[in-house]
Length: 155
Ligand SMILES: CC(C)(COP(=O)(O)OP(=O)(O)OC[C@H]1O[C@@H](n2cnc3c(N)ncnc32)[C@H](O)[C@@H]1OP(=O)(O)O)[C@@H](O)C(=O)NCCC(=O)NCCS
Image (cartoon, rainbow, N blue to C red; front, side, top):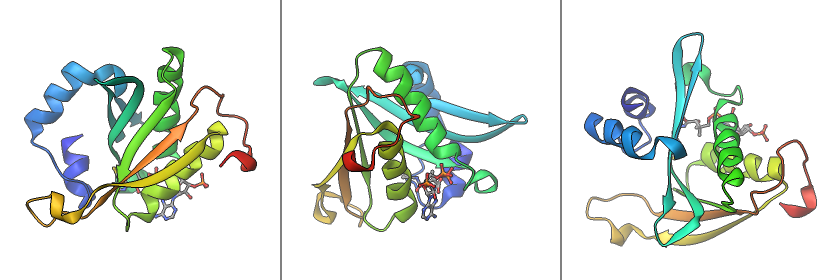
């Protein structure tokens, strides 16, 4: 996970120790995809302490060699299926405005679930101490519907 985050050259790469701790404590809301013995991608997520009906997706990354094959959205779909079984109805994530691939992936997830996706500003550049890009908050709900059915009217 750490290596994929570093190699992405897009994500904030946390320390390797942070990923180990993450898997120990938040493994139930995180996903690792393995293809033919290779780690193809990962998702880190957590339930918001003040809003336990919300799963927050922190990082999603797919190894360059496996991109464009549906791995990213499949990992999210898996996470959402597990979350929906536990009564979690909302997915939140943040995306920088210039990350078209990430926005397309979350829009694809919303379409697959027949869910709505909304966007609002969460963190502005001046909120960060290090010149970080802004982060927009995307909210996808309801998560309850099964992924096979696509309803354009509910995008
Ligand atoms: C974003 C990322 C995880 C997508 O993973 P992926 O496995 O290639 O995505 P998928 O194949 O599952 O594609 C899902 C949808 O997004 C679209 N998409 C994927 N990459 C795209 C791109 N570069 N430009 C436009 N659309 C793109 C696909 O066409 C697909 O849409 P569809 O279902 O309507 O056909 C991957 O590009 C990545 O690791 N990027 C670097 C890290 C990052 O930016 N993470 C997100 C922020 S946390």
